[in-house]
Length: 115
Length: 118
Image (cartoon, rainbow over all chains, first blue to last red; front, side, top):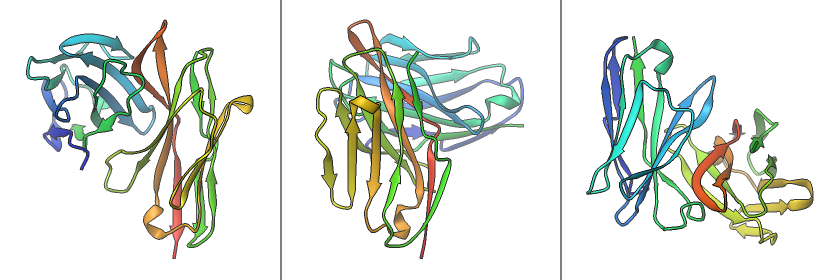
């Protein structure tokens, strides 16, 4: 158990809908990262937050957004869902001020299926 | 651009064989970090090791060992006396940098699926 929690574990929804994925980092970790894992794209970085502020952005679609709350949990919002958004979404957290140095601990993932 | 290449898509070995998973990376940065993660069939990503670019010492942890060679931009992972429980997808990753500050973003290779047969 990495200490990172993600809910829900599975999500099935229809095209055009909007969903919210939730992540709680390990106790004391300030950085939260979101990754998408799909068969064709592999593991892709989406976005990083550090202590409530956006720190880095990857190939995140405009239909996707995220935020990190004062209690450090994070939410990833996916809207106008398309079939191609079906994937495993991971949240990871790391502790320190020097985020690149710390290893990232991953949550169990949320498997999103868009029908 | 930074890139990680894991040329071996799938490897199949028989239990107790040694196996090496290859990882080649590209970066223009002088300071960077390399990682290996394991993804067992259950799906979670398990951290295995972190190595910074200034430390080229090989590391051994039980049956696992890592060979970091800056000259060839490689960070290979060897499992000695493989076991069925080692069956998983293994990912090599490189930390991205933003100027002089690491952002923490990981760039992953495509992964190598290791199957260890009894």
